[in-house]
Amino acid sequence: MIEDIVKKTHEDLKLNRINDNLYLTNKEIEVLERYDINYNTSIEELMFNLDEILNENDYEDLEEVSNSIAEFNYYHNTNK
Image (tube, rainbow, N blue to C red; front, side):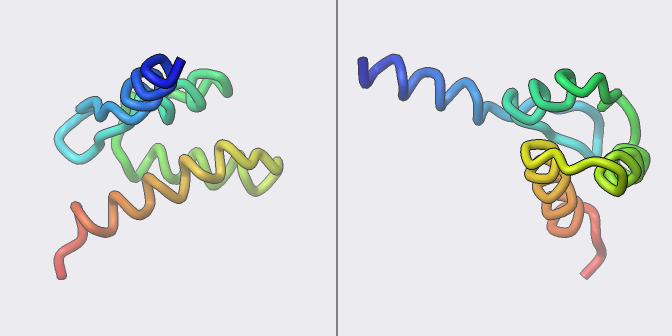
């Protein structure tokens, strides 16, 4: 029982390299696919598309993915 939960959580959090500037967890990919959002694009285009969708809709799970991608972009792709 506990092993199954740990295994599922581990799988959900596994990072996948999408391109040079973007890594997504399995869970994030699942949410993006649920809303039929193309994530095989630049991080800037993905963030723009997510903002467009979230401006018109209130999807909590998609908002979490958007925030995660924005945070990743800030820490990994911004010159500090």
